[in-house]
Amino acid sequence: MTQQFYVSPEQLMKDRADFARKGISRGRSVVVMSCRDGIALVAENASPSLHKLGEIYDRIAFAAVGKYNEFESLRQAGVRYADVRGYSYAREDVTARGLASVYAQSLGAVFTAESKPFEVELVVAEVGHAQDSDHLYRLTFDGSIADETGFVVMGGAADAVVDSLSGAWSSDLSLPEAVGAAARALRNASRPQADGTQPGVPPLDPSVLEVAFLERDPDTLRGSRRAFRRVGGPELENLLQHEQDT
Image 1 (cartoon, rainbow, N blue to C red):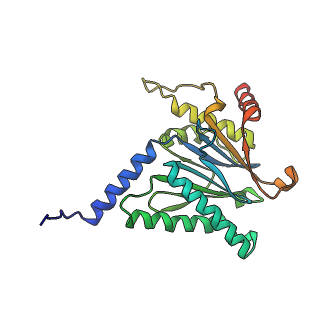
Image 2: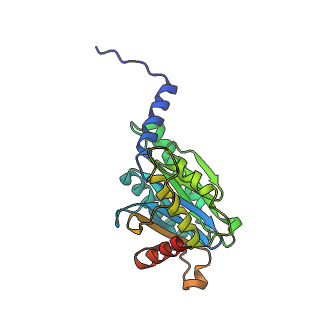
Image 3: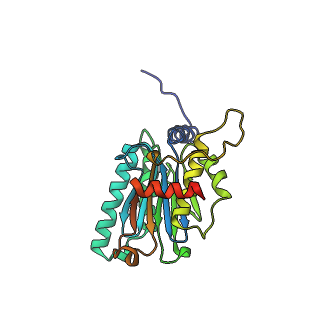
């Protein structure tokens, strides 16, 4: 009979956490930023179809890093949860806090009970009618949840992006200005110098960026209650070029 080795619960949880962190660290970074006109979501992503950013409901969006198949299954589950709750009660009853709680329970259950934890990190963002009522919930692979203010950065180069954004972020930024600041921070972090010096501001390449907005007042701007809007093509090129020129 084969003798099984004993592994303490502390060591088992540590090994799982290290495994998940290693997977997430290989992913390119994502920035979610609250600003004057709404919430900007900016990701390094060269794929035009495998999105890291997505719409969940009227004023709620989703951003993720890590393994695509795992966070895509969570995004789809979130859409189903929101649709059922909105249909069963009222659209106003679908909140980012409720969705984040559901995600936290799911991630925590997988982390403790399954053989492999999810290698993902998520943000559930809800844009308010005033900036004070914006919500940014950050969820990690073990089901931990944090209510963040200002901006959130996830992914392998998160520390470098946070350092770059700390001096650039302001609550008065417009959506285009927020996208420009996030894009510069992502590009700076992905082009480190071998000697450790600051790399300066490299050209902003829209082909490797995925950008979306949660607009604060979509009824007035577009006559729609859906706040989520993707930005790409010529609009993104013009936006980044304007930022580069200023």
